[in-house]
Every structure is written in structure tokens, then in C-alpha cells.
Image 1 (cartoon, helix red, strand yellow):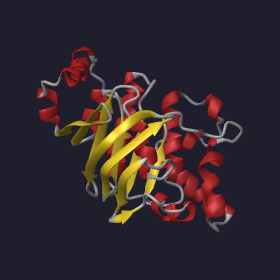
Image 2: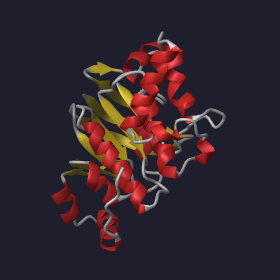
Image 3: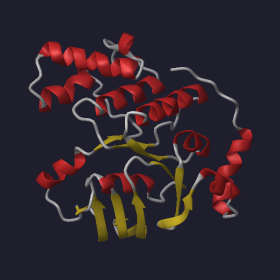
Length: 250
């Protein structure tokens, strides 16, 4: 479904990705790991055409999107929902208005239909009681869940893309977000989660890519990841020894 074919990309002449190649099949549950500045978020932006590679090709469902126009990319973007780390909610709008925003912009639904859809989505993320709150009144975990609800408002994507979905959250809220990601995948959507937290990656993914030096230095399952002798992967995996047991509830 997603193919990166020798993709190279840099910011202001600083190389980030170096002839990166990998393939993602429909329905896969993938975590992309790696240190800061290794290009994890860059991959998500390239998938939906927010930025373009300096060289190489990106194929989505067999179509080369590398040189598509902005208008042509709209069809590609409808295949995905992307949730960025900050959540990017509108500070001046309530939870309801944030989730309803795209419904008003891109559909012909009536206000009653919009209200019903918003409540349905907020129930999905266990936040209907917060429907009239402002973003400033939300905890970090609630903020992320509203962002996920909004990303699902207009269409059902074939894959969810999460950029550091649990960054900055306490263990209970991190666990809640991971549980939600897994729950959404039960509806037939694959997901790709960018993270530097191995403990959360193991909760949501079956396949793991580790980036270093602009390329993939590991691609495999959980058992292989935990047994890897790669020094930087070992540093990431060692965090598991210090993690408390968490049993958060959504």
C-alpha cells in the first residue's frame, strides 16, 4: 500500500533521509522508532504529500504521488488520517466545534446530523461529557483523544498516522491512548505510530522500523527488536527495565 523507493530528503541542505526504502501492506500495525532528528515525522509528512522528496519515489496503492499536484494529492490524503503530536486543536473553539469543523467545511450535513456525528465520535474516544469544554480545560490525554476524534470526522481512512501520540503524557494517559489506537485498528484500519518510546510501541505494533542515519537499520517483529544487538536499539530497549506496570482504563 505504501512504498518508499530510495527516498532522499533534507531541510536546508541538511540531510534527513538517505535513499530510504521500505514497504507497508494494508492493515499493518507499525511503529517507527529512532532518535530525535532521524526523520520519523518527516516520513508521515511525505506519505500525505505535505513535503516532497528530493529524490526517489513514494507510491500509495500503486500510484506514484511524488509529483502530484496539490489538487491530485487531496485524493491521496483522504486515504489517511494524521494526528500530530501537538493535536493542533483550535484554541477558540469548544471540543464539539473542533470535531465539527471539517464536517461543516467538507460535507452537506445538517446541524442535527453534525451534532449526532460529533457525539458518536466523542463516545468512541470516551469524551462525550467533555463536548462543551475548551481545549485549555483538557488534560494532555484528552487533547490527543479529541484530535483523534476530529481526524475521523469526515472519512474512514485506510491507515491512521500518529506522530508521537503519547509524548509528554503520564503512564496512565499513555496507556489510554495506546488502548484507543489498538481499538481503532479493530475497525479494519492499519496504523503507523512514530515514537521514541519502546514501551508504547510494543503495545500498538506488530512490526517495528528503527531509523538511523536516514535509513532503516532494523525491520522486524517484537522478539527480534528486543533481542537486537544494535547498540542504539539496545539503548531504546533498556528503557523497559524502568517502566512501571500500568493498567489504565479508557
